[in-house]
Image (tube, rainbow, N blue to C red):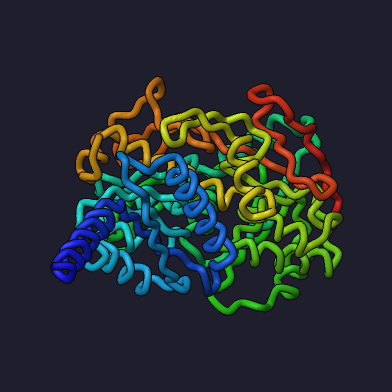
Length: 425
């Protein structure tokens, strides 16, 4: 009798455990934890993990604890594709979070579209990602990378006294999806689908031309294995360009380029980099070299964005406090962006009342300026291809070892005066 009772109790416990496990809400994310994109990949992981922890501490989503499954794609495209296939077909995830970089996001988008998954993208800004015709893309930054130059030009036109702005530029870039996209907008190039050669957009004459800046030098380095930074820096110096534009694929490349410009004694009046808002940048190049460098960003710790998490108000200051307590370091945009993606997916599930991705997508598409997704990056609604509506970059500048925000002016408190000219490193 006692044996039967024990067996019955064991079976009941197993059923209860199985039911509890079945109630777990699974979300998968493939990230470059190792390889060339590892610095940003690890920070994206922290953003996803912290958001998941806070949601679970508050009771989960729809009464279910969230199980976050993160796989290291080693900065490799094929691996990222295979991992999302596995999330869907083997792990049976309820939802996914996007990966880091346009290079990985572009092919992953086709896989997630095939399975009708909502594709919330943290870091994949190339316009051609959004012109593939997929219906459930949602980009959690400002706009396609091709349009980044609009805000760079605005800083030059609005914050530099007339007659003192740089009149020439050297544009150097990685042969990378993201870098090529920003370059296309700055130089006024045509954007084409590489598979069909179909023209997606004609960006002529370009933001530099609009700002009255002549391009004296243009050079591109290979996507992998480049190490000839000193020769590149010397070429920039010899060009005599008053503005240096460095479009890198990673923060590590931004460090290498800046160190080399310092070594050769380059003296530009203005430096704009597409990467470098991370603490690793100022630590890698030093305060003096970083001072005056202009970088666009989607997030800054002092911008007073208000959002929601677990159905309750959650401010940007709350995010900074929680992140610092968890990791003993302040966050930067590489962690804030995936945190916002997590907030968006949570709000989509709650708004749709289900993890059915079709209904989640419908709910996200229905967002408007007056009824948006609310995140630590601000408010989001999207156009028909998945790009955010009516958002601008926060233009930041390193000043005495601190990343300050200098544009837009008049929109937030705490905007610092723009430091110009840089006059070298």
